[in-house]
Image (cartoon, rainbow, N blue to C red; front, top):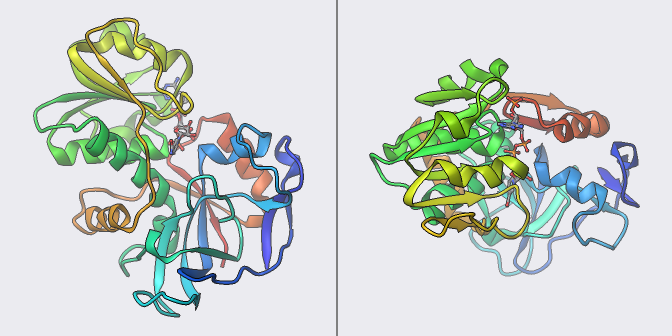
Length: 306
Ligand SMILES: NC(=O)c1ccc[n+]([C@@H]2O[C@H](COP(=O)([O-])OP(=O)(O)OC[C@H]3O[C@@H](n4cnc5c(N)ncnc54)[C@H](OP(=O)(O)O)[C@@H]3O)[C@@H](O)[C@H]2O)c1
């Protein structure tokens, strides 16, 4: 099969488009013929060696949408021909490929109304936003949340989910993405290039930070006493708060079928719309990684694989 893989860590130029052996379905697994795979912020971090993979070569990529082409022993709830989407096990890469083997229990059926491209775009972003907003922050109707990095993939899902829950949503973005985040439902938009969010926002019940660095560290300032903040761009641990009356949390973002089904339900109920998508061919993965690593684009970058 064709795939995008690396045989050593480095810049976008280390991404190779070439042949890898077709995967086979082990017991409990299915092989999915990938139609679309998305680019996530983690992918360039894996490429440069921030994670600990050592078995080269390996294909990159975490989420995918496609059609089941083989079923391993013991799988009785999926069959060849089913359209499915999902996210590989934490620590496993390999979705930038024509085929991927994955545990059947962590993929879900893709609704017909959702294209493969949009299903791939929503898989890891959706799991992450659900884990952060519902399971970790436990956001409630009537609360106010600041979502940092509103134009990104995870934040875009989070804004819509928070609105669906009935919260008031403030978000940060560059001016170019102001209308985009308004369209997602944000009640208040802060252009981070012209306004210091710590001066413009206060008294929030919750913060969801998808930006990291200084933005994460400064986010505690906008919380009211008793507020909670969740961080996904500050590594494996949430940053330590500089005050003792707030809670700092790191969403676990597990892999399971049920939250994927919930993503599908939210889309079918029109509560969450797919993000803006820029399409790439697998052969152009280096270009997609340059854009992803630049961190100033809108929505999601997605490979149209077939
Ligand atoms: N399991 C997990 O823990 C997990 C899962 C998914 C993602 N993540 C992490 O979460 C982070 C977000 O990922 P993502 O894919 O949603 O987006 P991303 O690709 O990392 O970020 C892109 C967005 O960030 C915005 N941005 C950049 N600097 C900003 C700033 N200072 N203030 C506000 N917005 C800013 C950009 O908007 P502008 O162009 O308007 O600046 C752009 O839309 C990444 O670090 C990723 O690795 C973790």
